[in-house]
Image: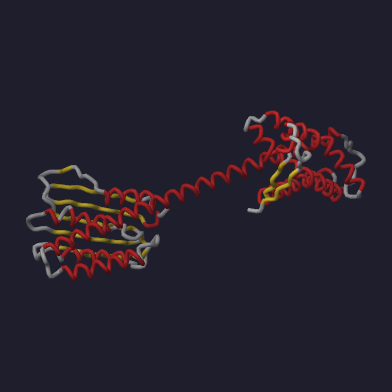
Length: 370
């Protein structure tokens, strides 16, 4: 942002203390001109000129050129005065510095009336301003023009500032949601690795010959998380691959008693999906389901994506009691819900435990991405 500063400074002799009133004047007469902001005033002035030209056309078609040039000459001064009014005088009043604000207001009243009249006289002297004989151009006339211009600038500036603040608020909300989403991912990934390392620890403690194979599969998963899962989206094909690797890693812990069924029906494997979004439901099926089931453990996983409608179903065995039980959500499931809130507007998550079976269903309209 380009900013120019113009200072009107009252200096004192070296060794002498500047009187307080001069110090106040020095503070008052320090202006910073924001070129980007001043450009906004320039565009408003062009709009004001267009309105004045249209009005003049309806009244005096023969003098439209001269009237337009007169308006341009007046607006050169008014843009500067309006900039000081809306960027300095009004904010000073809002900060309750009334003595300074009143001094500025007095200056505005002078320049909007007598000052604009003298500016008109200067334009006439150098041949830019063309006085219209049938119109009286006294100080009151210039003051009336100034008041109308202030109202016009004030309305347009209010609309512009309101829209700017609204966009800024939306941008801050997006940045906040992105930061929260990154935090949730940073929680999910260690949670996922923690569970996997627990599996390797169990195999190593039992001196299992499958430990090296488990470490090899874990390295593939780590490579995926480091180089592919860091972005905002991945193809569904990649998500299915990592789920398959995780299932293979989990199956190494069990004997043939564990039954795993993993199938999918996806019409377009290139469709995008946030990385590791489906993984918490798969993890829960093994960690809180199959690993805690003593007899005939099973995990059934099914995914369908048709016409941008995703349906993901995970059903697993558990040693729960008969009847319906209240489901206590862990960090993985809680993070999944929050990520869905931030990412999509049309989704459902349903988890139920009925006797010795746990069922989790996730449905997402992929077209409803925020």
